Image (cartoon, rainbow, N blue to C red; front, side):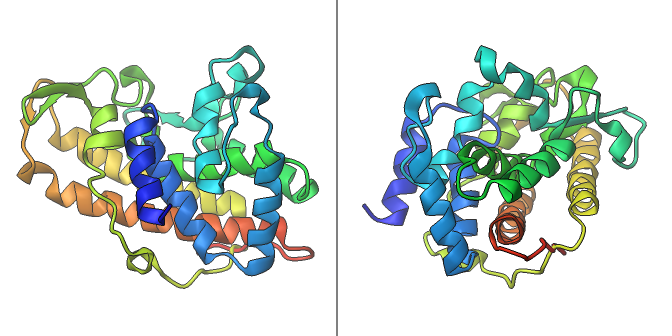
Length: 263
């Protein structure tokens, strides 16, 4: 099956979460293409260990990256629910490390899963799945948002006549069609020096867009294809950034004696 055909299958066959499955798969696919051969080998070995016991029936890294959404309501993984996002006050202009509650958020989850993968690079396939997924989540603005609106789920809007909400709009509608050539996304990978600081940078980039969204979108408003063109370009750029940054994180976690570095 070609890479494009594989991604199209994901789009029509997987349920919807944040980003949706096809977007998480695309981010991880692009990251996989950019990592070094030794890291790619390590990823393949970890994916092969993924047990179907809890629903991880993935045969590739892109498929595995959707797994965290499928298990978040299961008893064993229910505690991971808050790890997919970080909430801030409506008045907040920046995200700080203190924004994480005691049960964790996407900021702390990325760091924890990086450390787990770094410590067990040949066995902890769950850490690989969570890390790939959470790096995608932190690049989605509705995952760095406001608790009182449940990340945009309470703000109802209409897109091309269909009723939806801000969260679903940004997860599914705005993404658009993925380019068929992976080199459309290629950028040089900057080494990651400080992962805690990097996650704050990524979160604040998303918060900046979140603030823009809430200044421009109103509950009940109707949106056409033309209304979201600029937002679609922004999301496509976030996919490129997430993939590049995930590749850098994976290099740090899976290459022996090397630390992660990120722009």
